Length: 246
Image (cartoon, rainbow, N blue to C red; front, side):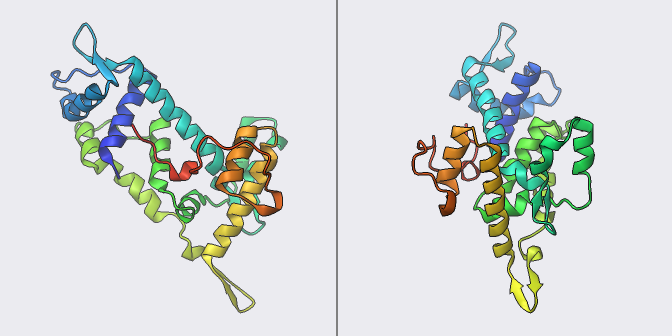
């Protein structure tokens, strides 16, 4: 994992969301961020305000907003794998419109039948699941900033151990294989089938969204429903193969 890139993205995100400024001589631990803040300064993402605090620049604000957009785009194509019923071959997202309240929807998602297959699917598609977990930890403010040395932990990679642990402990491709009347169905075959079903469902759910349909058409073509008339996507590379960069 690129701890500097992740920590730099986290700093920009905090500046945008909370208006955080960094005083590197205050003795509050922010001085540990000096190398990254100086790098951000050299790139024009931060600047000094009148009180000589590091603060977000116009370019940094655009980068922080782009980070959020990148994460939201990532979710569009991967969130469907967060709740999969392997026995029924169904996805929670296909029932979303049936719920009239957010509370009822959340109760539905807590049912034991759902498996979170985002990590094995992202691995199967060639992506890095640590990226998605990092996005979630930052956006949902799950990083532990209560310890005295949390800034040092971010830079050293200590704070990211939880992310690695979540990825390592997720259900694996091998665990998805099963015996079908003496024939072993591999985990890869299962994941292929799940991906095909999920992206077919997304095509239905986003049937009016030309951008999503165009992206899926290029990123995960399914010949039975391939539409050559759709406009080319913004990027030929799938979002799960496009790591966030500064």
